[in-house]
Image 1: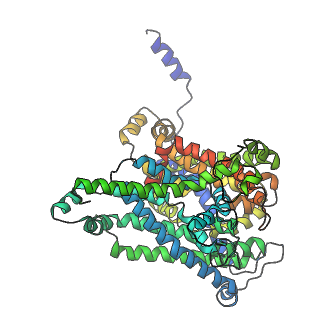
Image 2 (image 1 turned 120 degrees about the horizontal axis):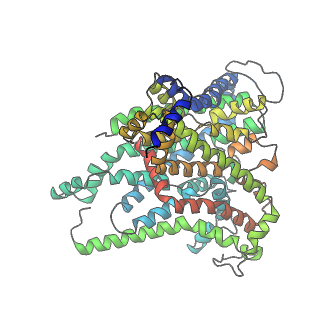
Image 3 (image 1 turned 180 degrees about the vertical axis):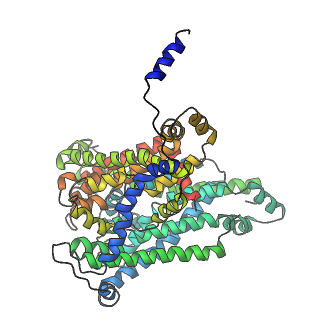
Length: 309
Length: 284
């Protein structure tokens, strides 16, 4: 114990002079520096250069790039029939899969929130498909949708219904994509469940005392209080659905007869199959404006229907 | 629910269970069907009506699939992607998140808003220009496009999640350390990091899933190098073009092998997983 101070002093004496402390603002920038570099290099600069390339006929094949003004945009809206096909397909896909997914996830969350026991097991099972890697999931579903060996047609046969050529019939390929998308509603369900658990139980008890039935409670208490969560899930599903690519690319590659040519697929084909990078950049900018505009629209309108306590 | 009659309540619960069990079955059938098919002989795969229990059980499919395709190579490549994303998320994203959460500096809030706004930009807007840039700097057909951005903590969602968590850690702890002469970097590494294990676990799990699943980026940026393909792209190429159906039992075996690590991680870290998903919803 007595020797301790001596050795301590010696250490202090030989320690190099204390480094100058960095000013606090600089410390902050040191912390965020990695992201800042990544942001400039992999976000800001690419996005800006994407806007620039959308005004050119760049092909990525070594041919000199020419400035073509708004020509790519004009082509998309007036001369490219596949553009409108892709837009309609995407609206079809989103218009059905997003509302269905939200309603199903909400209903599921309601059921799991009703204290019937076994909730944890159900929650795990319903969330399970959401952890299945996308490519593996599509491979599995391609097999399920197969006309002659697929179990979906087997189920139809058991019900006495005729077999469907799910992936080769232009009328059924999109419903197939939508059915598959419903398999992974688990994430939305969990977010809804967390929201439902945040609603104070007293509200329901008070309503019950006042003679409200379950239906009233649902529409007067649950749904209004859940609007922020519904709003969040709606935006997230919309943004994800607009960018849907893997499933349609692997399952049908846009076919049959372009029935599942989603917007992203059309863009991918132009960029990496035909190497029309300038045109594809214009398509990307259009998508960006659509997604941004839609998010803004939902956000603006949310002021009318989202209830923040 | 305002059901007062106990008998009706019981019937209601029974009905709910019935609906939930039916739904669970629908959710599980694709997975069960995958595993079942992966253990069949080609003859059994073609049987109609389909049989659920493979007979004989072909465990050897799982050995042969490694000979059918360079699965080990794909697996190694996948692990490179996973390692970069997990390290980048746990170390770099948390480093950045600390700056946003616990250090005051001019422009911080504006920069954080910028970070949040990038969450809303469709990735395809960057896909093509990045291809150009990677092409110019010679990164195409290397691992760099799928590792370097992640190592730099590119994922704004992870930074956001960790920042929210760091903001909840009491200031007293870091103040005490500061008085003891600990630098901000020391506080981040020695105090905040150990206290944030749940959030870091959630982020690590998400990073694992994202990179294990990463398909489009390797497909586009590494198209010319089949030997750099990760499992996701390998599985896709194994399927072949439309019309030429390869051996389904091998395809299902490889799918099972790809699903399995995710299931194990989900089972082991379900708490963090659910927490992370829930946390992501709170910002709404």
